[in-house]
Amino acid sequence: MPSPHSTTAPLETPLAELSHELARLVERFIPEDGFHLTAISGLKLARATTPSLPMQTVYDPCLCIIAQGSKEVRLGDELYTYDPLNYLVASVVLPVTGRVVEASPERPYLGLAIEIDPALISSLLAEMPPLPAPDAAAKRALFFDRLDPRLLDAVIRLLRLLETPRDIPMLAPLALREIFYRMLHSPQGHRLHEVVIADSQGQRISRAIEWLRRNFDKPLRIEELAREVNLSPSTLHHRFKAVTAFSPLQYQKQLRLQEARRLMLSENLEASAASYRVGYESPSQFSREYSRLFGAPPQRDIARLRQTMQSQVAS
Image (cartoon, rainbow, N blue to C red; front, side, top):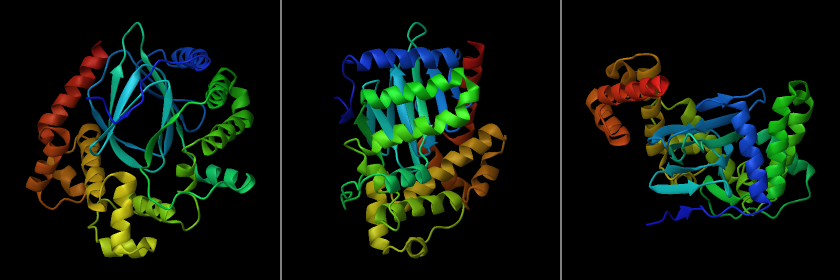
């Protein structure tokens, strides 16, 4: 059955021509598979020559564009499939599962992510004519929008600055302003708008997410978090789930488990030490919840991940 959030479709001209140019630039600057930082702050490039297994990660607020290939992103129980016809936006920090679907050595997956700076969005809104007020109903913070050729052209101009590094400090901020200006004027632009409006409920949910990110290893008391962001407990719970697809407690659990996995993989911590570091008091509860999220107990999952990484390096 097709995903309710699937956007795959034939690419149309002139969007096709711009996407081909974007793919050429991305491939030029990242000849090897993986995620790559660039000389432009907040810009990452990605390449894969084979489809990937599902990988849990945390998206910071970002704009994601695919130049070639396709990808699936799962948020809770919702599956989003997208390709060069549309872009994907995470407007707040979200724990997701991502998988490259379409990729081959002859036609690799090529993509990019641009960090969303709330200060830049606020600055643009202050200088622009007033936009329509955002819908009061809370919306998902992960969403698609159709790529506009003018937006894609601005993204290409941003990437071309990698060819002339001396121009980056002066011209990259201008290109980024145009990119987010065009996003704000898109059909889904109100979703960026609503998370930066001072003291709006959207911004309060963003503050709750930031609080959880800083304090994920501490006990969570909904009443205290609600007071912290000036919402009632029931409103916090309802709007938080509407935005992130998780309750605050489920969201905290995702952050804890993903950080524990990183600690075991990158710092060689034992499962018991990692579970204690992220706030679990019961190792058995940690193991159960870890297995539920990652599909295997901690020791077996980390061994599998290391084997996969070694195979990728060897190939």
